[in-house]
Image 1 (cartoon, one colour):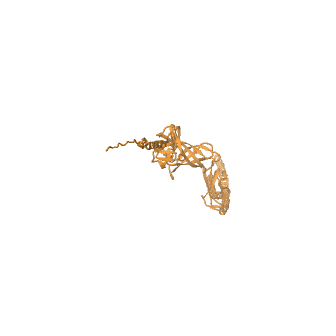
Image 2 (cartoon, rainbow, N blue to C red):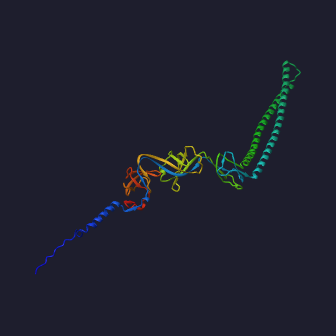
Image 3 (cartoon, rainbow, N blue to C red):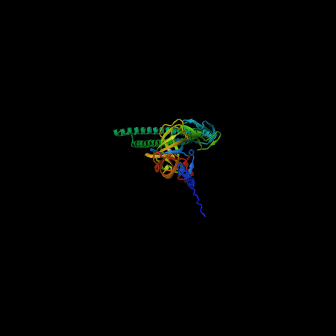
Length: 419
């Protein structure tokens, strides 16, 4: 029995190498994915990102703050007397000059007191005049007595001199007894004359003292009259300074007590800016730093003159002296923006400030590839920050483009694909 030899048939090459095609397809697919997707593990639409390019040059460090204009000279006008508002002549916003009438108060009792004080003064003056006329009359009588005593002395002295001359001639018509009587009379008249003179001097001193006492009493009554007169005049509440009325506290018919505020007047020509600065930025601010104040219409230059030591709700008040001419729209309580110049760093890298990029920190930022289809995370060291820019110390070079919008949703990824 013979064996029949089978003819061996060779398989087609495409059956033998069938796996080559799938492997090729997979390889091509992987290459295509690698080319289009890279190492990206997150995809984002281009319209959802905002980018900025790293620049180089002088970097001005500024601090932005908001605030209001405040009057440097401000006066509260208060009531010096009690009374009821009879007339109110001004409203808030009115321009007034020193001495202008603000409010008219009424107080009938003060007018009665003024009339009473006036009559008291007239009566005191009349009483003083009567007393003075009486003293003058007494002084005139006393002066007449002095003159009479002087004449009596002179008469006695003449008689004594005549008798002395006769005795010296040996004339016996004058007896020794008469001569002694004449001597005694002269002494008596001289003493009486001297006593009257002393009495007149005392009377004159008494008149001077009485006049001073009367003037003091009149002055007391007159001071009381002037005080009441001033109180009546104070019923007319007037502006103590020129400026613009900021507030009128007293309404028509309302009663004001002594010391109550009537109106607030501010000098609109002398203003300063009161800015509110975040407490984390106030450590960079120093006295004398230049400030630009923006009124939304004009810009005013100024300098820092005071930094409040207290912190209120995370903000610190900074006062700015305005050094340039005030624009027409400048007025108290006008809301303004302030740009405080902190420093100027020469020839440094900087970029628009990304979201959540604190100064003096090291953070991860997404840097775009050259074809701008990918963004990979890079560790960047940041330095000083300004209003909308921040200094780049390390991690980026001139011309690098980074994402500055919010990247918190993909911060855990190292590379993203931008569609």
